[in-house]
Length: 118
Image (cartoon, rainbow, N blue to C red; front, side, top):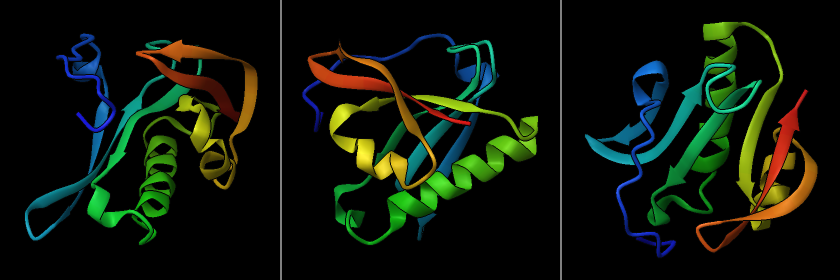
């Protein structure tokens, strides 16, 4: 709802993915989906990265990304990771080793770019 994309986003990929939840006191504060190679991209990917607005600026997003990369490599081995990032968050993802690849594209009215962590 925060991004004005109010619709059910079911792509059928969830059963093949791993889901990383960041909770405190039973309250969900952060989430990321770990996607095996070949399902969304040729490479493994991390998607649907989200943090509760109350946690922004606390480092929770960085902790989530570090753990997402660690878990993905633990599950499927050291390998490149591709993401479809909101364009305005490129600086955030660069801090985690991702590099922009290709031109911007529109997804649900939000500018995105593909990024790769080699």
